[in-house]
Image (cartoon, rainbow, N blue to C red; front, side, top):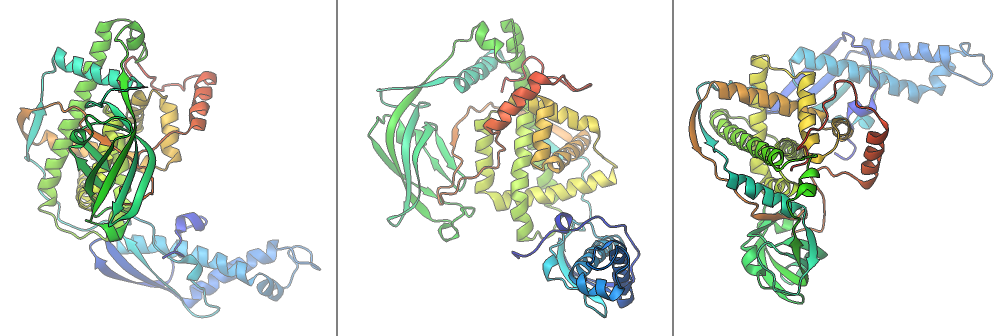
Length: 509
């Protein structure tokens, strides 16, 4: 519905009034309702007379003093404006009454085509709309679940490996005349074709040679085997099978030919782990403090993995015993929100941007299945939160934002502003509530400890679709202007009272 508008954006606030109206609600699916509202003619006349009275009092009409123009003249001259205001007020007041009377819990705005709705000059005012609501279901038993929990005692070797990753993330790329090795970089022209037709291309992409190369809609396995040994001027070809999530619907599930024309080979010059190196990650003055901070990041990542696995097992246990349908439109909208939620979760836990990009590509490749599971899980966790009176507190937001700020090297004030600007505060709220519910479920669970294996970064994630030239991102990016603004803000403004400031080690990820 291209013409459909949301009331939240288009209608002014209006005081709720008890209207004489009738409501018909039809269940389209477990999450969808079709609503027909009929407002009595007397109510419409009352609202119209109220608007006319206000126009008579305030309207400016040539030849008459303000407030002295005849009522008939006002009605004729301002008929369209009066009708629009009547429509707006009736819609807002009636919608609030519908939700309350019918016990509807909306999860989206009603898809009312506001422009197409007409208030009749006489008779009742009738309009219809579809709305997505929270599904009704019996809450499954969530107490006493059996959950595998990964555990690990971190060693000096683990810390050494984490420091090596930091060195890699802060190395400098330089040209090389040697054949490419695993973990080197190539600058390549990339072309995808299907039956001889070019589907998408990129003139210059810099890629790290890792076992897997992922796109938003497909994966190339054994990418390292394909590229090890290449030099500038070499060409390598392979294939990639597209997922159902590719933007090009005609190519869903099809196989594309992928061609890599290597322009350059680059290697990383790694920095030495000296006093200058450790100081840039949080002002460390001793190697011991630096290694302790690295260990803290590893522990946070283990905590994230424990929660991730517990959440997955909880979701499997709860959703398998709870059945309800999810409309396709809701899944499409939610896929972006689920990606944003996972970005927030991983950033607070100290993961690198490349690790986050890999996870987002995995979600995009399996969006429909993963999103349906995550959305069902959300409804179940939300219902447990309602039942157990779990709510969010202001301190929860301070904690979450401080952790995310720590990973970006920004200030909590700046991160909060970015979240608010992008309209993601409700996603953060859901994350806070759901974490509390998961904590509650885990407090009642029975655990079996299993070894936690640290996996190195095995995937190079490219933020593009193989089946389309569209480039988009679920990972919020900061513009150069925002960086300059943030730097100026931090240099000229004192810290807000009570605001948590970045501590040593904040930039270790």
